[in-house]
Image 1 (cartoon, one colour):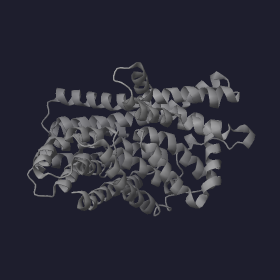
Image 2 (cartoon, rainbow, N blue to C red):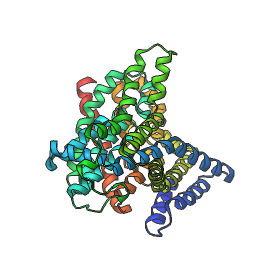
Image 3 (tube, rainbow, N blue to C red):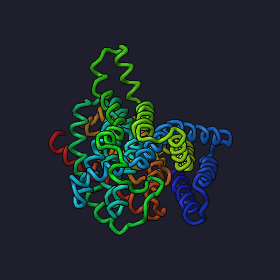
Image 4 (cartoon, rainbow, N blue to C red):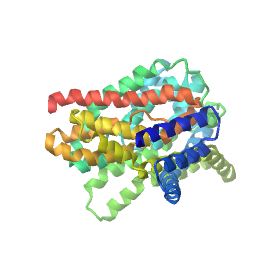
Length: 438
């Protein structure tokens, strides 16, 4: 009954947004209330869940989204994105630009949260697409696949890290196996599937496109690359160096603080204000106007994220994820397939890869001890399952749709299919690897 209620709620949500044309935030609120009542939750508890879901979702990403939009706006309007695009195309050419973005997405995705990597790289994809008249989705999907794979499979991202700790898995071995599994997953979901998307020629969000500038009007290549890559450098240094310092030391605390995604993005925006604004002769008032424009462009997206968070919390508090875990606990499936399947169903129903991964880990842990399967591979199988079929209850779905300006149907045919391929090929990689390592 819980699963049926969840499926019906999601179908109603899709109908309200696609056919009734109701604003997504209002649709999320209505469906959250309806699903909560259908699950037997008291009205006061439903409202508490909605408030908690909106607050936790928006609170956790608002700073990153807002600062990422500011940085993207400065990079676009200053000509830095154009400079990076020109330099990159001079090296790889139009024939290999998809592969360049695929590799870049993987490197950027290792230290950064998905949303940060997306906000840094999506404006570059859009700039290259406009300038060289290439389909934005065709060249951008390999990059998105790389970001998704690193987010779902590899620590130190939240879900795989939490699952790894719960299983007492080895970080180094999990990373090594994860990279081996990541390569075919990225090639299938990004390179191969992305190659079929040339027909999607819808113009992406023009808010991230600036008027074309002459070479003397653009910042230098060094300044452009350094400004864009600064968040990656700060988080990467923190990730690599902080474990080497004593716990409680000033140096370690400083590195951890600077490497926190919101702080690193704030520092990067402040640097960009100087390098791409003031240093380029723009008055501070003009720079501030650009930053305000960036916030206006993503404000509605934050509301949608809040609505998705509300539905996720109602489903979680209503016992949907627990019910799925209970239902599959006594299954006779192979442990890796069981972990993947449980995570996949929870992900599709609840929308959160983190909730999916952590919920699944709690029920698979006893099975892990009895079956004796490799804990590092179980981390990866659950991570792959947690990426299954992202749709309207996932904030990543709306981030993608907003930037690439696709219809609901086309977003499901492209983004959702890509995420499904990430999940399925991840499981296939785990099963193949298990024949070698147990």
